[in-house]
Length: 275
Length: 171
Image 1 (cartoon, each protein chain N blue to C red):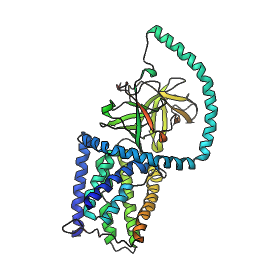
Image 2: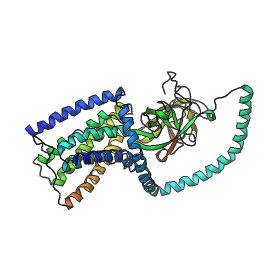
Image 3: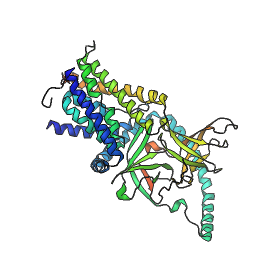
Image 4: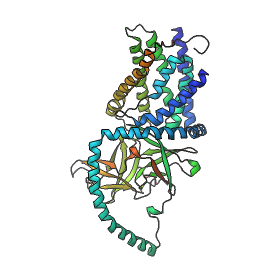
């Protein structure tokens, strides 16, 4: 018992240390130390990623071969349909540009300044889904900036920045909440992450159907409008339900993303509307 | 020299925990490299060095994964006392089973604390996901990796350092 008491003082000291570092972390005292550590560790993290990610991808794909073949078949069909839509969309885009020029309007998504970044690592548990990227405050990245995929689909937003790295909370993180709207009806709701990287759409109107595309809404001031988020995959409830349970599938495969883009031209300006 | 080697080991463990382990999930759980490294250190480099290494490793993991450092220290806190209790207790178990029991209990505690931290920070409470996707796969992973680490040592005829704290020195 006397011997165990030597562990007891250590346990007490560690609880005290835990409280001290928690307080230090909250007020940002540890940020310079974290930045310095990440600067040194970053090349090693990148190297480990380069070695082990292909192995992980190979193992993952081997386990999902049937699903991938099925997905590939569906994507081919969808690709053909989208190519047909594209020509019409290009004409419409040109027409919109002409009208915007005549009305002296600007502010479309294409005006955004974006910063490309590599994914350093992903922290993924059923309750946490975050990325770290190799761009930080030295590159102009700020907390709250929006992160999209290489093709412009919403991935998440920056929650912490050090000199050379930034941490991004993905939309599949259980703490994530984004104001969204349906492309078809422009009715707004809240896109929230939940356990096991599910994304749900809390929506107060019953007119959402499977296949609808959800995009960001500017109502909260935290995200620019019109960034695609995901597609509705499941609607539970009847037409009489005021709040049907709606599940979304993100339009981008978050687990395999190796590069992202940070929208540096948009800084959140919260309007007080909760997501 | 040993102290420097321990430092290198914990830096490598933090990098593997954050950069490699998440690439190979089982269910919602990932291998707890931190836990296994600390146990291996306790049995090879001695408990005193591990008492210093534990908070350092927790800090390094917190820095690289953006987790709360205090929470990580609390998550790995019972590891040494548990190992000590199982080593010295009068349980009718082999040495392997004693070590395994200590690792499984410490892993269970660590995953519960880290998940509780996520709930406190705002994640919706999901006991089903916690048990089915984190704790149970975590137990399986800890058992498999602990066995993978233990067996080579056993094959080499290794006997672990005692976890009883001596009055002086880096034992």
